[in-house]
Length: 149
Image (cartoon, rainbow, N blue to C red; front, side):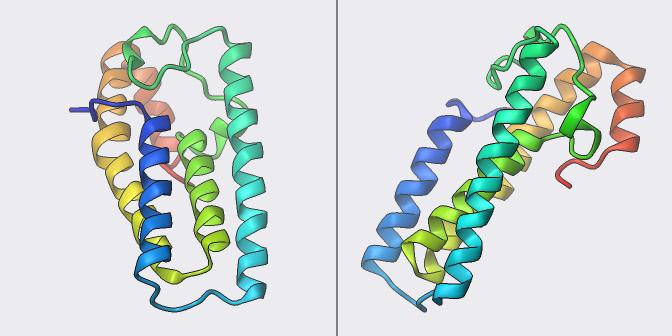
């Protein structure tokens, strides 16, 4: 079962929740050095997302995460050699950067929730569809490449 709304909306919800928590329930401020590192993670996340999208465009397959059954090619090149889900990895890094920008540790809590919910409600159902669609090719790929990193 996938979540009834696309990952982009989930990212906005998680980002908004992180902002609300950091603004209204501060727990522990994040130091300047750590904030700087999280900014770098956010930039890395954006780059990872862009490279991952480009791989789908090159392969001329769908990028729509709500309809994985529309995929006509299993993308296994580029960053997909190292992670089966670099786009979700990139969005997670982007959210970590956002939490750093917000400046309080509490802002990381929704990011952890995002990581877990993406795994359970988005990635695992996608994997099931891809396994049904691509069979042994997907199984071989899943054995070689980790889900996240």
